[in-house]
Image (cartoon, rainbow, N blue to C red):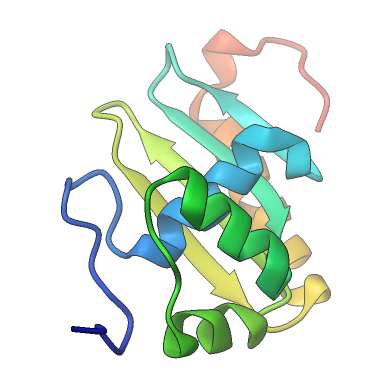
Length: 125
């Protein structure tokens, strides 16, 4: 039976299979920018959303095959911000344009360095 729609990721680290695909891209060197530290408990990266072919490759490496709706969902977006918390949960927020993603990323980065200033004394952002 072929599953349709955006499928949930069953292992709990991600909300959806497409989120796991974008996260995999971020680990594979697709990050355009990043900030944070796993030791502090927050990390975020700006990632271009993979093309249909690249997304299928990442999905297959995870043991999945993306369906039509999942590929269409990814193709609707330009970039994503991938973030993780101290518990290891990963969150992916999608943006239709690169400018929207970069603006949101910059706001998050500035907030991060303000909140964790004692860990990054003198850091420039």
